[in-house]
Length: 230
Image (cartoon, rainbow, N blue to C red):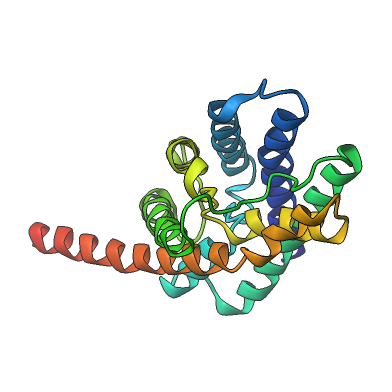
């Protein structure tokens, strides 16, 4: 299983390095990447990861996705903790790499709520609900793989990041928020650097609840579809 764990580490590293790296570069060079560019970067890197690693580990690259696959009965519990550990480690290493490259960036592309806390939690629930519902429908077992899986999942990530990013950060992924929060707090530039750490719970609670709702929705939809066929 080491190859699968390393694939989750590497995939999450790629997600954070490219996605939050786009935010850091955008800050460093006066907005040249733009918000739309950041959203597209997240979507495109997810697409690439799904095609590169989907047949190895399933390209979860998200603790909420791993937990949802387990709840859906598609993933063995004994691999849940190693998968999540690999994802969090990959996210942390990516953010520390960005800190070395851009030592003056304050939050390393962290997610922070720009609306009310509970509004942000609810928005993260809904965003992850939509994302995980798509993942469940295009995946095979616990693996995001196939001709259209990368396009479908990457498109949802880009879409949701584009319209919801300015409001709540559009994390949809505890690891995506964990890496920058830890990296910025461990090597702070100023007092603002530790703020993402205090908001981190939003990006764990919201995505996990949303992913579980997606599992329930998936089976409700599929039960209805199966009933129509019989």
